[in-house]
Image (cartoon, rainbow, N blue to C red):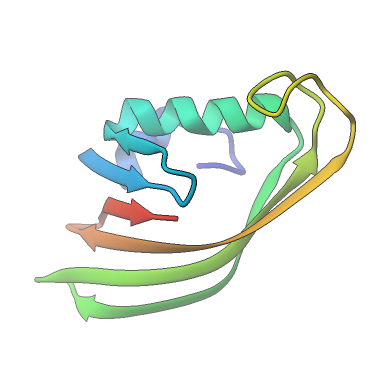
Length: 111
């Protein structure tokens, strides 16, 4: 969804009641909040790409999965937003996300 910029597909991969908690204290509930967050980050870094480097999981299709994913977000700060006016600087954020997946959709995320 991130790299394709297909925000209309968020509902295909995330449950309607999806919850997200971030290390910076932000909280998102539902697919609309998540899509708005994605758009705000990509508005600040229009060429950003998300790369998943490692994935670990346990669980099964019946009970769901717990997933840990290590990845990064990298791009040029070329737009306005929470980071202030565009600076042109390269930005790279590494992160570890914990997910819970049920019935093929993300239902919970902590980053």
